[in-house]
Image (cartoon, rainbow, N blue to C red):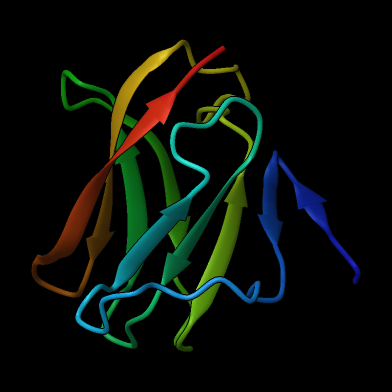
Length: 109
């Protein structure tokens, strides 16, 4: 498997893990996490993935390609490349005009 590193973001082939609920468009594992987390998006309507801290401030944004499923590995760094602190973060899958789904991420340093 070839992995390309760009500012701590990895775009890799989808792992064999599948969400149990077919209506789920967002699957995150491991959760809680401490080093790298895989975020899977199962929706062709998704345009971006946004991770926010508990105050609502955007920590990281990923653009979603027009394919289903999409798999992203995130190393817990913000837009500037700094490591995030331990805490609860919210991960939003966003379509063209609305949030399709959101889930919590627990990050432990």
